[in-house]
Image 1 (cartoon, rainbow, N blue to C red):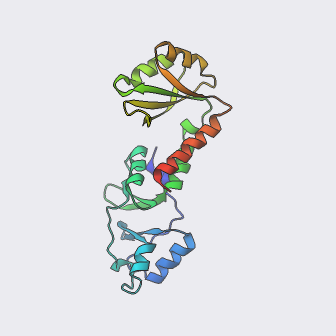
Image 2 (cartoon, rainbow, N blue to C red):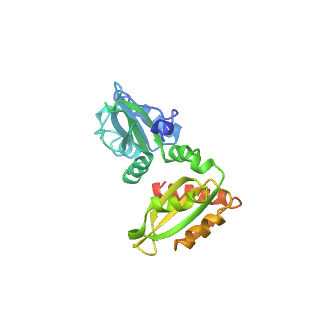
Image 3 (tube, rainbow, N blue to C red):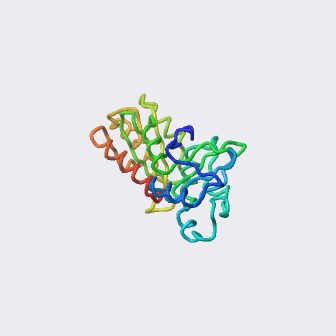
Length: 221
């Protein structure tokens, strides 16, 4: 997924020479906690409402604050998963997107990321979802894929996480292009895979919403 899809064009940009009154007004108008600061196309960092409140009478312009151009930044060539991790590592609710020359391309928050993710094929396409619990030492996506595709079924989405109940196991969530996955479940169980959950057409929408809500909680917003 291209990171350009996440950019929110409605997020305003401040310049170092902008005064504090403009910065606070924009934060209030947009109901945001931070805004990007850009000097001649180069990202300078985020200025936050806390910074403005703490030093309101010490500075007259945005550029007088100590900004960190390396904080909460992702590059245009980074993968979706790397962007998600960047959110989890960042103590702000916004990321700046820059190119290889660190020229500012735009900003986005977790809601923008979630909206882009919700439009992916794995979420939008009809089908079914299965969850498999498997020992980490026995995990082989190639083998699981081979078994599933032997029934003429395609995997259109994959999500893996540690099993909270047992650190030696992982839970593998697969989105399939088949609305009825009962035959696939039978195949996997025949080869001793533990299918712990099956979500078919009737429950797929609520399950997708649960996963999206889980992503929001992971991003801590």
